[in-house]
Image (cartoon, rainbow, N blue to C red):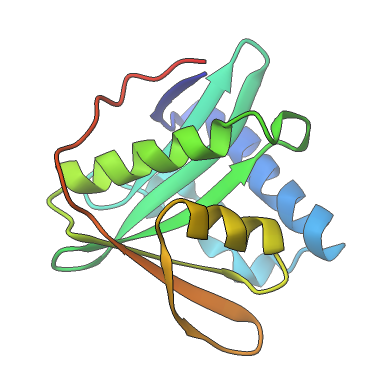
Length: 157
């Protein structure tokens, strides 16, 4: 798998992958909740907000993004892995890439949130060193303090 910043021609395929994950989980999609993926290149400028795609010979297999959330904090969003490619380490590889990107942008903390009902995602983030810092009836809020140097982000699998 190769990870790169999204290209304009990949936006529709990435949007479909993210939305299909929501449809799979919830059985429906509320388009009003996802304004950033309607125009990915506008929301993710490649300066403070970065949207990445993981690709193989068949196309996009995973997505992930980091958004500036404060002076030294970035938020991880839009983590998604194509259904037929799950449990192959692609999400872990993308998450490491996002962490390294945040470090290169001088972040000292990452935050994210996920639906409480997504037990696999909750476990994934906990295993990846994130701790729950808050919750409500529908969401868990996580953070991770970044330490150490960035790893090389040249990936393939």
